[in-house]
Length: 141
Image (tube, rainbow, N blue to C red; front, side, top):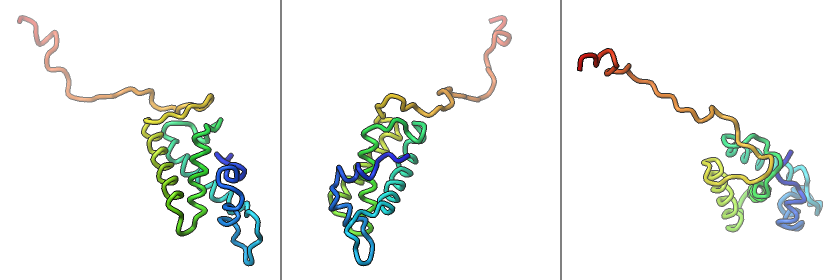
């Protein structure tokens, strides 16, 4: 299950841009190459899962709208093999920053059914030397 679809990419960036980014046929076919787009979306999914797996169960279900937006921005960057525009680079850097914040717990995903990953329960274990002052050693004082 992908966090974004080809249609999400088309809705955000337009069909013309996606044709330019995915049509690698020689001569160009003038259509979106769905295989190329799917590879970029899969790369985005893998990156997102890598960041959020410490906080949430992956794959995320249901998919928060924020995650769909992040997946689109990451996939668009991946589709620019070389020379992405400044706006594409900025969107990519912003997406990575958001993923780091999700990973650190600064940003929380808000969606029904998206649960935190189970951990140790937050218990802290401490070890050290035995007690110096006990009721037995203090007898007579």
